Image (tube, rainbow, N blue to C red; front, side, top):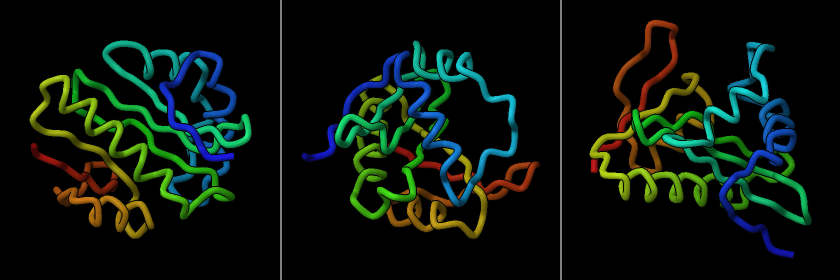
Length: 140
């Protein structure tokens, strides 16, 4: 069975949160991330996407069209290196461009595989945030 990309729904939060907590890098530091955070993130002006494989969410991503921010992009470690991250990034970028944005941004921990992933996908390093995360930007 192939993996399917689709828009996230409220019923996906448990699967999304499971993936978020399973990652090996950019681990969830705050234990206060709630279902409400996901609701706010995937409803306008945001949107989320999931990748399902055999009925299970194995990757997800969330973007905000008001700010151009990529809020989340995570792949279950057991499903890495299958192109899921790139499919999600491309879907978010295409959607954000369709909303009229001219610049997108995201943050990630320095020295992670995510840093290399975004650089290889054409995102530009734009310095460190005050909390030490690396900021990436992409201009249309």
